[in-house]
Length: 360
Image (cartoon, helix red, strand yellow):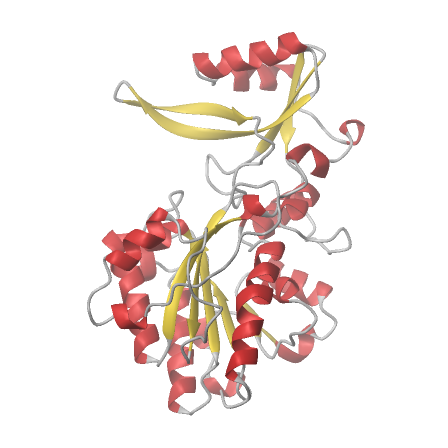
C-alpha cells in the first residue's frame, strides 16, 4: 500500500514481508514483483539484497507490540522488532556510503509511549547515528477516507530541508508537541517540524463505501440482539432514538473491554459519525469490526467485508485481495492508507528530493 501511495513516479528496488498471504498478494498486484520482492524475516536480509542507492526507505513494521490492542512489548517484541532489522540494514548502507536520502517509519500512535517513550528515543538516536535529521507527524486517515486511523509518520532526511517544508502543521498534534518538548539536548538539534498542510475536506462517508444490502450475509436476529444486549444503557437509548426516526442510518460497530465499577466487561459500541473505527487484524476480541444498519425501525448487523475494508484503506476495486475473509481483513488491518501516503509523498518527500538534487 505504501508503494501504491507513492505513485507511478517511484520505482521499487526491494520489497519485503514475512507473511505468506501478504507476499502472495504483492506478487499478484505488481507485475515486476518477482524482480525485487524478498519474502521472509527482514533480519535475514543482507546488504547484498539491497542494490545501489535508494532515494527512500519506507518501514511499516507490524504494530502489535506498540498498539493499545497488543502487549506493548515495544522494539523488544518479536513483531515490531522488525524495525530493528530495518535500522540495522540502513546502518550498513551508511557504512558503505549508500545511505538512502530519506526514510519514513510508520506505526501506531503507541510508538510514542511504548516503554515510557524509551523506544521512540532509541529510534531517534539510531537515526541521528546514521546521519539523519528527523521529525514526526500524527496523521488520522479520517482526513482522507471514512476511517478513524491515527498513525505516526517519522520522516527522516540526510540533509536539513530548505525553506517551505518546515513550520506549523495540523498534524503536529499535542502528542507530537509533547514528544518534541521532551527530547534530550543531544537529540533536539536534529528535530524537524515538517510543514504538512491538511488535505481538502473529505467528501465520502462510511455508507458510501459499502456493498449493497441484498448482496451480503447479515447476522441472524439472535446475534444482533446479543450485540445490543452488550451495549451500555446510553448506547441502547441512542439506538432506540434512531429507530424512532425511521430513516436509514449506518454506523460502525465493534467490541471493547471496559472497566465499570471495578469490573472488566465486554461492551458493544456503535458510532454514527460517518466513520469506521480503526481497522485491525482479525485476531483480538475487539478486532472484528462490524456494521450496524437502522432502517424503518429495524436493526441489522453484520461483519465488514474484505472489499469494504480495502476501500477504507484507499485500495482500488481492481486490487487483488487474498482469498478468504480473514486474510483479506488481516491485509487491510496491517496496512497503511494509500491516500495518506500519496499526500505525504507529494507534499514532503518529492519536494525534499527535488531540493536535495542528485548529490544525495
